[in-house]
Image (cartoon, rainbow, N blue to C red; front, side, top):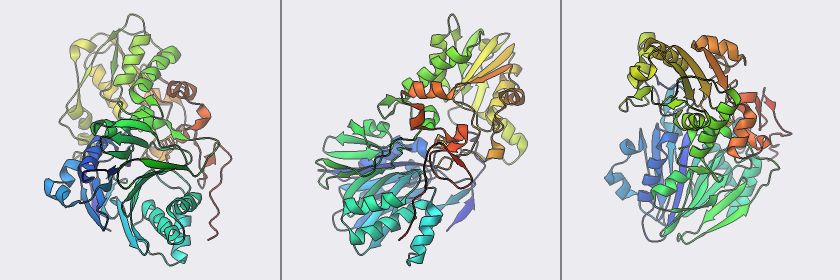
Length: 482
Ligand code: SF4
């Protein structure tokens, strides 16, 4: 394992840990469409990017650190032979760059080759790993994807593909949207709670499975449908179609509400809902629940934009304007060695438009508050630019608890709303008023039952059996008896 320091990230918001893709093509190599699809999923992970293809005889792989454009050049794509392929973009685990966890993860065994791309996080990794270790499996990474790979390989030695996947799914507990390649067969697997998105698309001469529909659009394909929670989708090796198997059917799903609020691209459609429209509806409901009269409504760019446009649409006679301008050339990572530099970070990214703000009351809209550092700096920035008052409205409920399902949210003690006291947060960020949207309005905006959403980071009650944490349903980690 290679571990090195990464420069401090400017991200005070949560970070997604992965995007996955799988392609089976009828006439052409899978590498190039996979590469383009990864570009479309870049927002889901910037630490590493990888593609594994299969040409019917053997696997070919290239995994590089950094953005997709940095990890691959034309020569790398040219070496990735075969019409089947899977790809992955990954976000760093907190504080370290770890090449051993870069994906797709590959393994060769008696029944052929396997490659896996995983989005999500298992919550029973340790139990599975120790069971498999007892049985003689040796692991080269500390990640949960390798554990899934070993379990699946073990089952493939004894059963056909569908039965092997079913047996593995019965042993996994937690969040997983996977693209998997067994020899040249590409498949997609979504956990029974549907915690992370996964969608099927049809290409001109092939099929694709990806974390988000934006990847299908990028390839000029048509969305077929979402992979259903608990479903295995197997693409035909010749790219001509797919078979689907409903391997688990839970009573309730646990879709991550944060995909709609923050992670997914606004132009993606998840489980039938356009993310941009969900965000606009959240904005409208935010006004209904907690509207405040001010001279101007403005978004935090770019995260608050769709929310603010919905909010302004619902608010009568209010000016909707851009009051903060974003420097597009500041990447997600820059070096901030001192506290002073960290405080300057927001000024590197955002600059107020004085004429929009000066001597005016302002409603500032954002998607969420995690640590609160940025919110405080933005309120200060607007006051320094002459704002009379600054009212903050947020399109997600208060984040009070960590995420165990693959989102690098923050530890409890870093969350500004951990105590659940909105007044205290309002004071800390220095706003004249602060309001969040309610969980029920989130469910209504997504168009799903509240009970079918994961809101663990809001309620502290999770849809999985996690040691030391409460659950929101009758759920237990599987007993691993073999
Ligand atoms: S805890 Fe929050 S971020 Fe994590 S899966 Fe649930 S809703 Fe999503």
